[in-house]
Image (cartoon, rainbow, N blue to C red; front, side, top):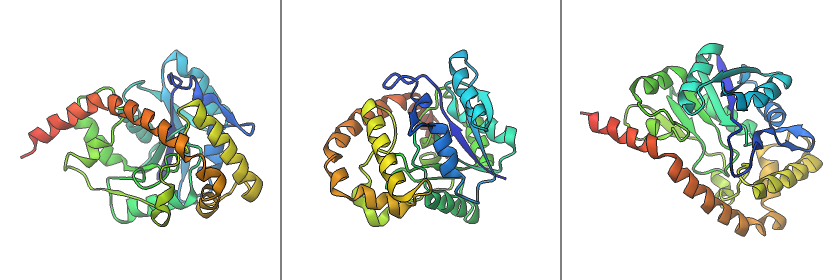
Length: 264
C-alpha cells in the first residue's frame, strides 16, 4: 500500500499555530487533501502529529477534515513517521509537512513511480524545486533501518541519514528542470510574509485555473512580472530560514557523523 503522511505540530514560534491557518476559507489540511487526492497512485492519506496536549487541536482538525490520525513522538519525527506508516500498513509512503499547500500531481506521481519502479529507499524533490512544491518518498522498510541505527531523538531535519551514510539508495525528483529560475520561490508557510504570499498565489491560481491547477499553471503564474517583483523579499526570508535550518539539524548531524565513522 502507498500512503501519504501529512505531518505537523503547533510549536512554531515564527508564526504561532500556523498549522491551523486557513487560505480562502479552507484549512491547510483541507487544501493538502484536495491536492494529494488528484493522484490515483496514493491509496490513503493520513495525518501524524504528537501526543502532547498542545497538539490536540491539530489532531481534532485533521479528524474533522476526514483524515485518520496517528499521535506519537513529539520531537522524534522519524520515529513518528515510521510508527504511522506501520500503523496504517504502508509499504511505501510520501510525506510532507502541513505548511506546504502547493503539492503537485506531477511531483507526486513521478515520486511514486520512481520510488517503487526503481526500488529506491528515499527520494526527495527539495533541491531543484520551489520550496513548498516538494515531498519525500520513503520505503517503510528502509526507514526502519534508520530507526535501528540512529541515536538522535530530535530528528526534525532527518534527510542526511539517507543521503550521507552510504547505506541507502536515494535519489532526487526535479519537475522544474526547465524552470530553474523559479526555484527561489517560497511556497511554504514559515513566516507571516510567507502566509500573505501563499494566500495571494492560491487565490490567483484558483481564479484562473480552479482547484485542480497543474504544474504548468503554477509556472505560468510564477513566471509573471507580478511575482518576479516579489523575489527580492523572498530571498531575504530564505536567508532567515536557512539559518534556522542549520541550527535545527545539529543533533542529527552529529549522529550521522557517528554512523559514518562506523562504516568499514
